[in-house]
Structures are given as structure tokens and as C-alpha cells.
Length: 328
Ligand code: GLN
Image (cartoon, rainbow, N blue to C red; front, side, top):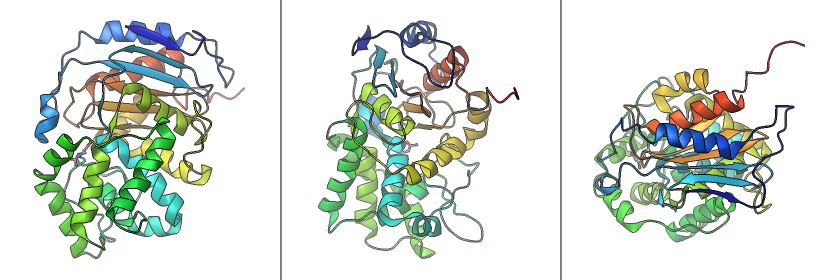
């Protein structure tokens, strides 16, 4: 299945790039990559292991609000770590950069996403996109009580995707009951005074954000909002301030694929984020957002086909941020 929502099959490109046909590109890539069956579905969260591994959806949303998709783009999955940059942005907007910088670093870890490790010297989590950083951010989010904090977080996601999402209770319970590793990280941070407040409530909010349901079109709309100076190009609503957006995109560029972030920046060269459900988003500032869903993961917990699609798009559409740096 391939679909063009709205009314045009060609997009106007900024940055004086040659005209392109996004729909043709994603159709071609879907056809090429659908035969790739490398990688394993995440099963350490039992509920995630039940998914059909061969589901495959691609969606591109442009900063003009056009939507192009192919494959299983309406299949729902959970955000997992794709919620981390959104919560980081919310915390930045709520508390300001200075406060957040004290609590969470901005360095790539070189370690898997769920490593039980903190930054040498400061004992902060190293960045907000690995589990430790995301749990610390969940502990900082504002609200009167757990329900209010959850509602505010869901409201924030709603601005990016254009509708209020729901939390998948099956995944939430599955995460919560198999969370020894995340609990270890939380206790380690509490030991170093890096996690205040009620540890169980903080972890619940983190698991709830990981369990938010979206489809690939909504994920691409989220990426397009990040690409479009923080304004959802389909609804016109602002989701994040420009000053916080800059920080979010910076850490997505340097840390979005955990210990594979350097290779990603080298090969594809745009801010991106993955989740262990198989969701993957890439942000091309000023131009478009990409969402991919394909649950088979590589050894770093990143969607194999998600990476392949973005490598293909970056090459077909010349998207690497440093690709046009030749002096005139
Ligand atoms: N919920 C997952 C966890 O806590 C998120 C990890 C991910 O998507 N990389 O391990």
C-alpha cells in the first residue's frame, strides 16, 4: 500500500536542493528493503516480543505538511525511547536549560542504552536519550501528582502528533514487571543524589511514556515537528520552544542511536532517534521528518530497516547536514 495524504505527490524543497519525488523514493526503498530479514525483535520486554517481525511502514511528513507513506504505516506500536527526546524537550521548557544541565549530561555514552553507568566525576546520567537520562528526566517533570504529570506528558506528545495518544497497558505492565535493570539504574542514581522524589512514581511515568501508542504517520509528524522549528506542520501548533528544540536536536544528532551514534552521523548525518519497539525517526531541519516502523533490531537496539531506509533517503535526497558545505 502506498498513500499520498493531502494533495500533492511532489514537494517544494528548501535549501535550493533539486526537486525530488519523496513518494517514489520511499516506494523504491520499501520494495528494496522489505526482503531484508536481519535482526531480532526485542523480547526482554515480553509484550514487545509478540509483534509480527516483518511489519514495515515508512512515512515522510514535510515541513509543508504533506504526508507520504507506504506499507504498514497505520500499524500502532509503542514509542519506547522515542519518547525520550520529547520528554527532554518538555523538561527543558518547564525548568530551563541550567537546571536540566545540572541533572543530565550531553555526552554520547559509547554504551548500550540500558547500561547501568553514570558519568565519571559528576554521577549524572550521561545524556537524556539513554534509559538513565530518561528516568532522571521523568523525575524532574512538573505536576501536582502522578496523574497530573502523566496528563501533562501526554498533552506534550499530543502537540507533536496532533492527537491525544493512549498508553498501552499491556506493554506498560510488561515493562513494569520486568524492570530490574531500570530499577537498578534508578537506585544507583538515587544513591548519588541524582534522583529525588518517589522512585516508583518516577519509574511508572518513564514506563508510561515508553508505552505510548503511535503509528508511523504520527511518528513522522513528530519528526516533522522537530524539523519545522518546533511547530507541527499539519496542525500549526507549537510543541516546543526554539531554544529547547536546539538542545533536543543536538543530542539526537550525537546520542540518538546510543553506541552507534557516530556511525549514524557519519553515514546519514541528521538528528535521529530509535526505540526498541522498532520505531525510528529522523529529522531533516527545515525540510521533513521521517518515521519508520520495522521491529527487527540490530545489536544496538536500533531498527535494521529503519536505518536502511534513512541511509537510502539521505543518499537519494542528499540529506546529510554537511553534504552542501563546499565553498562557492
Ligand atoms: N522501555 C525500554 C527500556 O526501558 C526503552 C528502551 C529503548 O527503546 N531503547 O529498556
